[in-house]
Length: 510
Image (cartoon, rainbow, N blue to C red):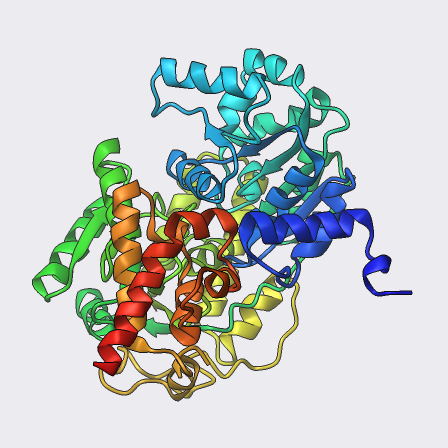
């Protein structure tokens, strides 16, 4: 029997959607099994490392099932970026949110009710508002996706009370498959998510937690400002995030980085919504910007070329640490997570736990989680092994943490010497790539993104530009053969990128 005849109709349809809508020839590891179960009408709790392509895991089955897909997201900025990306792929997507006028939201609702929208992005509180839930229940809902699902768990690092109402989804939309997605959840958090969203009945898909491209380092805190400057000096001109415990500290660290010759901005909940949005937009579109932030910054940040995350203060637990470092290196290239740690940080965290007013069980649980983070900071053997073990994953020594590399005793990062592993990895990425052309393509992408008021990655991810710079396509057919270049984006942007490639080749042969 021919191989093609062995592929089910659903199998052919998911691959057709993947190629025609999104420009990919195949799924990435872990994606296809989730797509199959959601398309078949099953509930799924999916744990996937950041950068693993979780959006496709619900977008493809939603298009297979038809009707209106509801996507629950915690941040307006994240919803807008996802909608912009889908629209550039030629897919009808909208969001109803508080940043838009009532007239605009009403017009979008009318389109959704008329069957003219495939994806509708909503915050949990708006979705579960009784009138909205009742109105949506009358429509042909094909699938519901809950992003950042750990926010529903009281045991998670980022519990959000408004997510708690999502427990009513199954009753409000019976027979509709629900996909819950998160990048960070230990076993207790997973059980809590599954119980609240699915009554404990859902397929759980756990992809590997490892992010081997991120080097892990921890140093004793001495002079935190100088340690930060020394570290960022080794990443001059690269985008990064610095996490600090207080608003005042983010401001101070940003000032010191600017005084040291870096471009840095502070981000925290005390800033106006307009200022926060401006900072986030600058970070997403401008190269080489460092954001010094509290944990208010980061959820939903899908900037692929963040080269480092620096913890100037201790995060709350290993889940929070894993989530925060996961904002680095989403393009798969070399990135670094560096944390400075002092016992006074742990003492401060313990005081926070006692002052939060939670019940005794919650305080005890948080105290245990904090202790495990301190154990990680004081580790004498491979850090990655310890981190992955926390999430139930076994691994050999990684060869890409400060302990494995024999750098544990350093109080500050080396300025000049680059890790040999990093150099080698930069070279699986750069092989055969015209670096001059790559920079021109990135500049063009930045210009197009500014014109459309979207983050640069929404136009094309870095890996797509790298492949363009390697293969140097000269025709629309060749460009369309690059993974990630779908028909809609080929039509919108193909001519501009082909002109840039042709200009570079003319320059080479002049």
